Amino acid sequence: AEAPVTLETRVVQIIPIGNCWLVLGEVVLVHVAASVWRADAERIDAHLLDPVLRLAGSQFGHLGEVFDLRRPTWDDLQSGNLPTRTDR
Image (cartoon, rainbow, N blue to C red; front, top):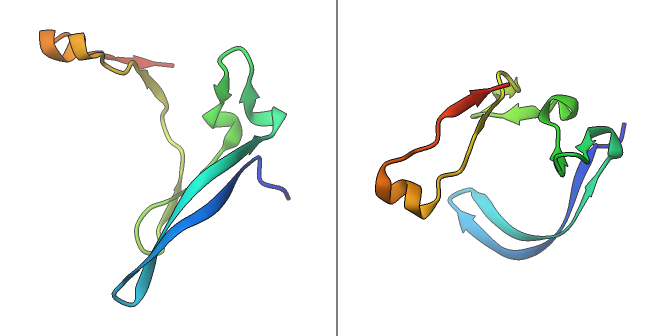
């Protein structure tokens, strides 16, 4: 099956770290299938995407609860008026 979202990238730098490498890249193009795109919100619907999450080592997971949290503005941070969570 094809991935519903793919990223076209170019390698910027490869940094050796111990017996591994850190690969830094630049995303040059994003492809998103219509089946996971919400045109009304102009974003990917995480539930329709149903991603597999990479945790640590050999551990993986599935997306759990999803909620909205407005990003704070500079004025919010200065005034202490921080956004609160909105459950879907």
